[in-house]
Amino acid sequence: MAWEEWEQLKAAAAQKTSARMQLNHVPVDPLESGAPGDLLAHQPDLEAVGKAAHDLFEDFTTYSGHARVASEAAAGGLTAEGFALGAALTHVAERWTEQTKTVLDACAHISNHLRFTKNQHATDDSYIAGTVSSIALLDEGFDDRKGH
Image (cartoon, rainbow, N blue to C red; front, side):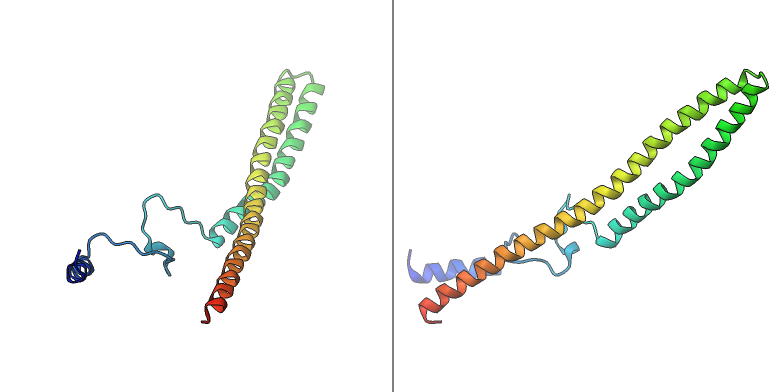
């Protein structure tokens, strides 16, 4: 291939605007990539979900406890008065307690998982920053040897 032919091919390629690839680039705007399937989660969004799960855990613990105590008291009073409804209400209160624990476990799981994820991402970011800075330091060493 002659030099002129190479220059013509480079010029023709530079004029094309269809498919281009750019290496070593991170979009300034994360939405710029527009790749389908990209999942973006912003810290304030995750914090809001974690806070809502924690608040639900706290509030539901309080209010479900009131409902359980009132139901058990009513069941005890009905049973003491000889009503069969007392045993049924006792059963309902027991099921309420079981279901309450399930909801509370789910809220705790969400909150704890988000806290773990936040900490894990911070650890990953720190590791990546250390690795990248090591590469930059290594590059500087090569540049120094070349006399740049």
